Length: 462
Ligand code: AMP
Ligand code: ZN
Image (tube, rainbow, N blue to C red; front, side, top):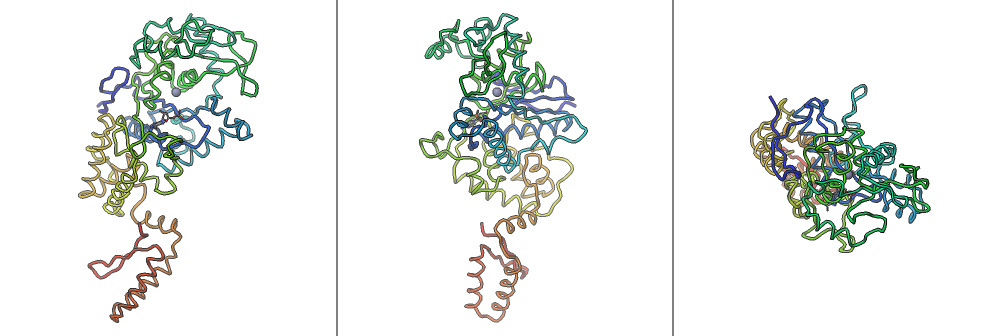
């Protein structure tokens, strides 16, 4: 039986049943970070959303039947400028930023290459770096020139937009609108204002590689060609799903489509195009100048990664999301409730149908979370299994508690001793002593609960 998955496709503007080209190798690509600075909480959205899609596809088709490539853009104007500013090499900057990015997203419960790829098995999760694919970019660029879709001008290679009759089909922007936008700053060597750069000369101090198409001076690739090269190398000329933030539809994805299709003579680059909506903070667009720019790490300093993940997935991925303190508090309470309900239960072998069904409906995470909420009141094993599919509840209640105690640096022996002292004081009806002990426990960051059965339990104060 074909697994049921419906996805909203930006290319057709419709939700349709997903049918992979090859169900034994479902292939998805997501545009990843440009590694020049710490990633912000908006950047975390596509990472978390498409991680969830990857998990769902692995569940539906089998983990060995899904390949995911999420690239790293490590050549870019912002990277050059930042490396110069900091007086370090570009490689040192991109390596350092990428290492930090990995730490950030691991804490968000995102599947990492080391979780997915097994020794001796085909690589299923790839993080290609642009600078490792200059050879593929050369081949694409030379193929486009040979096919009459690109031309050389003043050390640049440009894509000839009018040579592609259905250019603009993804973003569905009218040609005159795109032209008006492009006319703002038209380089004199462009035949049409819409033409975009595939390769350009490097300025002094910028990274450079030998140029394609017989151009003497060294140069560097344009942004769009990187993703055409990396997706081709790792997923093929045509693949199943291409994903990214909504801001990438035009021009980035439109230009990727133009390059790949015109070079390979194919009808589509990817069959399904998915785009996540934007994140804003407390009702405002996030920006450095407004002072509401938050990095993933800053959020993780205050909240567990699991709370951040839940808070991101509470909103459907195509909707805009408003990132608020209130939302985080709510997500934190929701997780507490789930941990409480799951207790020490082992996950059921089967993931509950309601959760799979909700996610299969264009990743309807609000409905899936609603389903987990329902299961939290009725079935601990099913809750664990459903939550597990979404990357939640990786530990039991007791393990989580132990981790929190460890993280808070609480002296467990001292807490136990104080609780015994409190019990003795209460037995002797010495209320003043009992209150003093309770204050001492509060000072240690512990909250105490007296249970109906006469036992006393404690937790790290939230
Ligand atoms: P960048 O590093 O700016 O190329 O962005 C990396 C990814 O994050 C892209 O898929 C962007 O679309 C996405 N992105 C950037 N800002 C936001 C935001 N505020 N909300 C949601 N996604 C974003
Ligand atoms: Zn891309």
